[in-house]
Length: 313
Image (cartoon, rainbow, N blue to C red; front, side):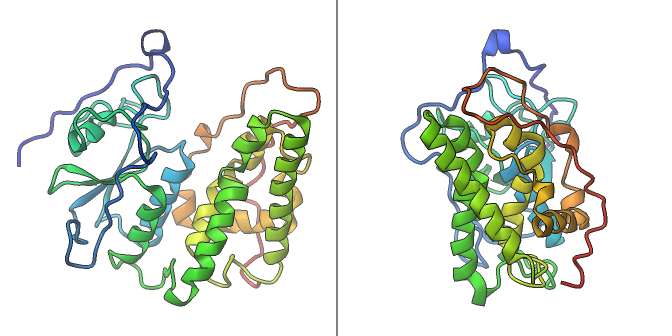
């Protein structure tokens, strides 16, 4: 195997490259949708074959890193980080997070172009890369976590996607995506006062529903962590410090939902969640002029190490 030359993209330079904007490629936003298989197919589950490119700042990439740790796949699927900041070149490798150890790329776009020459679409994380074929398997973030959870073996105690619960998990995941993962963006982009209040009330109602659900169960589906918990948690992590202040969703912080807040701390205090969390990248938004009908929300930095007392639930 030839030695990899480690390259860096150079500092973020908005004057030269501008801000990152997704390209105009037609078709799906996440076009690489290969799946890991148990044996047959293009991408069989082989230890050491695959690599995850992630960003600490991205909640969808954080989910993939958490699942990798929960399943104990650190020696099966390797992982590296792109830099936390982007300019017009997109995600890049810099000294702060380290070089690309697999291909020596300076920017993640090079992985996309190696897979599809002339690629002009959204350069996203996470990316699951195949060393054998030298191409992206998938940048479709929901599939990546499912495949990590179900195809590589790993810790049998961490059954994140139990066969008998999959329809229920899928249904709740769809609601988590709509009313939690992507909800702050809809609240922030509401063009009228009516749209704004409708969008923010949908989020608040969902948080109240989750708080009630967690009154008599430790995790969303009982005593064990599932894919649904992994999908929800990065959004809860960001709610008080960034999403709520940026969008003006609710006067109530996460800490005012007693069961939901204790549940969020319970997950954070699990090594797989804690070790894949960097609070330094969870920055509060800059203060800007907003419409008079938007509620002002200040960032809140809570104590995630406070005892959760959830083990007996």
